[in-house]
Image (cartoon, rainbow, N blue to C red):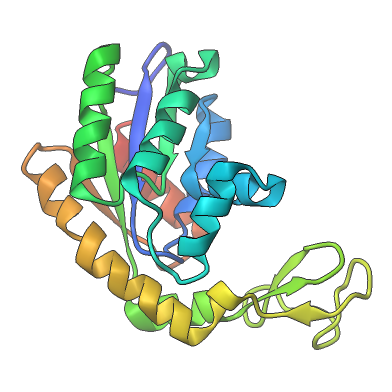
Length: 222
């Protein structure tokens, strides 16, 4: 997959929770004119709307566990069937397991869409804990803050509406440690899966956001 006009961007962003995949995926998807397909956002939307899929997913998410493959795969297949995905995509948060990777491989083969690169964001556990446990959300307007990287002007009070800030259950240290353990056990094997296919590229997930973005552009060949 080369850069330049007409190049098709088909990427998977891998990395533990809190690695910064979403931030980079959003900006680069806008820059490249392709959809940012984030399973986390899709699931949260389904939970908020209260669909059958959302209710089922919430039981797993509340425990910091992974949502079953079949649910996620159906969600992804439906999203990639939409017209804007024909120009490419950035998958963020999928695949998370070897069976999901195999299902994605089959889906893309059926579409005759070769995957370009798989980019892994490498971040230390100490930094992941700092990032993930520091988030605070407003009960009223849902604006998010971070105790170190984006603190509110007054502790515990939302800058936007004056509402109370709280720590979501999935941001507690116990749940974060569970999520990281689940990641290591179920997602880390994907690195070898994609390395063996010659698709894996690793970028540092710590440092200045623009420096990380430049590293991703280089790794993507875009």
